[in-house]
Each structure stands twice: as structure tokens, then as C-alpha cells.
Image (cartoon, rainbow, N blue to C red; front, side, top):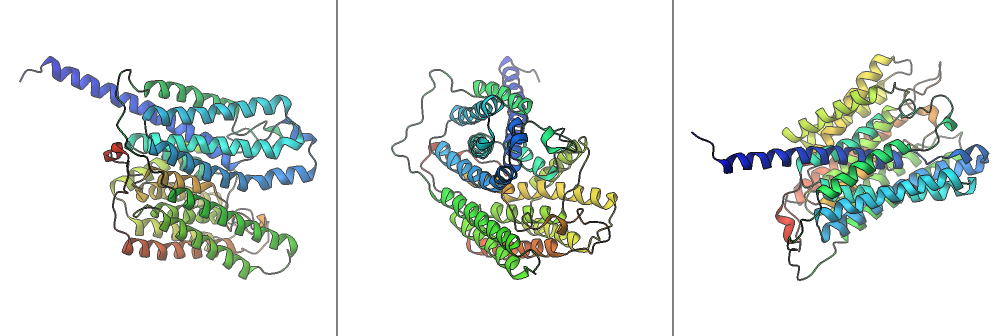
Length: 449
């Protein structure tokens, strides 16, 4: 059967479109990676060497607060851009965010003083939120783009220890800034190309909109989740500061319960079963923090990213919320039973399971509303009850000869089990359905991420 010229032309168009989507997926990956590193680590400039201990403490304390700001800004941007959605608008907003971040870093290199470090960190977090929200709306409508976006968010969250990758080495003052300028610059160049590639064609009519309703529920969900978790973790940190020698089991239990409560409130504010992502996010962060961190060689980031991608693929093919919860509970249990003298083989195996689990949870959440996906992925960078515990109570950080403290693992397991109950209730009372929208483009299905 002969192939007509029109068929050849259609195949060529499809091929070009697939190549363009692949490029946009790479852009979404690097953009999300920049935002993730921004929310995970404080911005630092050369002036930190002249900082007082009080100023450095304030800078580190601003990291969880900056993450909370970034989460709220990201969801607000996703709601605003998604309400009047045009592909060019979403890409342009993300580009605006990363340009502002680059300006903040350039200014920090030349005019930074020790007194400005905390302010610059908050500005950096807000820019990361703009970047994350704009990219979320642009990426979460196509599976390939959504995969790159989720991999950028979850992959660098899994890697966690960025010392070797960012050349921090033994002295944290050796690193001039995080994220490094080369990573911001690379993501900005990619965003420029993707924005131009996705710009609205000249003469293309705009979809008619008789009215625009701003859905505020996702913004409220982000505020509840971020602010409650921030408040209770800072409260727990103060309890340890004021009374470091006593047992804080009750305080830890209250903080874990408040975390599950905040996730429940946020999940109920989101439409349909979009709250799955919130529950899985808070459980994943708790389990990862309980597993603990140790220095990894820089090359291992690519192995963990590949394993996270495997988890994403598996979750896309065979999504199962009960399986995701079981994997998270297994990681928490592993943190409970792992002895302090555990070797690197166990740590490597646990890291691999954590990477696959992170990808699987991202793909299993399957939100129907873009801001819900943005909230779930951004929530990976919020503090947890485990992250504020003293460093010597966490796995892989236990001094030689010290007894293994099971507190982090038990706290994580409590959050996972509480989230499992919330997931069961949400599944029972909320049918899976598409949220109501006044946007005529809402017929286009969101990616299952």
C-alpha cells in the first residue's frame, strides 16, 4: 500500500512534536531541579565568612521557612496561571522566576552583606516557587513533560546529600552559592528555548471566556499544610533547645499527629482524590528523613535518578496506593531495626529502595488538577518531625559505640500509618472525578503524575 504525501507529512509532524516534547521534558527536569535545590539548601555567598554565629543560625533557620514560602507561592502561581491557561503563559512565568533568581544570585555575589543573607534566601525561595508553579502548569498536562518535572523534584530530594555534587567537600564555606550559577544558567537557557517553542502562534484565536473563577481551595490547602508543619516543627525544635536532656516522646507524638492533621485538612480541600499526593508526600519525607543521610559520591546522583525514573515508570504502569504505603512503611521499619554499625551495603540498598519508592509515589498520586500536583511535589521539601531532631539520633549519623535510637523510625512509621488511615477515608468518601472548571481547555487530560 503506497504512502501518500499527506501521511508522510503527518508522520513528520508527529516526529517533530515528540522531539519537542522530549526537549521540554529535559527543561522541566532541570527547572524543577533548580527549584528543589533552592528549597533544600540555603543560599550562601562569600559574605558568610564574615557572618556571626547568630547570623549563620538565622540563615539555616530560614531554610524551612523559605520552603514553606516556596510551597505557597508555587501553588498560588499554578492556580493563577492555570485559571487563564495558555502554554506560552506558563512557560513565560517559569522563565520570569528563574531570571529573578539569577538576578538575586548576581546581586548576592557583588553587594551581599552578612545581614542580607536571610532576606536573599527568602527571595530565592519565592523565585523557586514561581519557577515550580509555572513549570507545573506547563508540564503536568503531558505524560512526558510530567515525568521530567516529577523526576527533577523527587530525584534531587532522594539524593539529599549534595556535598560532593556541588563541590562543598569538608568546608561548607567552600561553596559560594546554592544552586550554583551554572545550574541556574543552564535551566534558564533551556526555559528560553521552550518558551519560544511553545509561544502562541500568530493569528491563533484565544479561547472565549465568559468568566473566570479563581479556585482558592488549593491555595488554602498549601497554606494549611506548609504553615502548620512549619509551626509544629519549629515548636518541637524549641522544646529540644530549652530542655535537651529530657525525653520528648510526647512532643514528638504531638508533632507527628499535627503533621497528619495538616495533611488531612489539605487533602480535604483539594478536589476529588487529589489529596493522595499530599498524604504520600508527607509520608515520603518522613520516611526519607528517618532513613538518614550520609555522604555519597557525586556520580551516585545519576544512579539514584535512574532508579527514581524506574519507580516513575512502574507507578505509571501499575499504580497502587496500598503498595506505595507498604513501601513507605518498609523504609520506616528499616530505619527502626537498622543498627548503628550498619555498613555501606545496607545504606546503598536502602537508598535504592528509597529512590524507587519516591518515583513510584509520584506516579501513583495521579492528580486531576495541576495545582494539586504542584503542592504534592513541592511538599517534599517541607521540614518534618525527624528533620528537627538532634543529629545524633538519626540513622547513619550515630557516633561509634552509641546505642541505636529508634525514635526517627517510629515517628516516621506513625506518620505513614496515620496517612494510610487518611488515604483509606479519602478513597471511601471521595470518588475519582475531574474538578469543575470554567476553563474551556480543561478537557485536555492531565498527566498521571
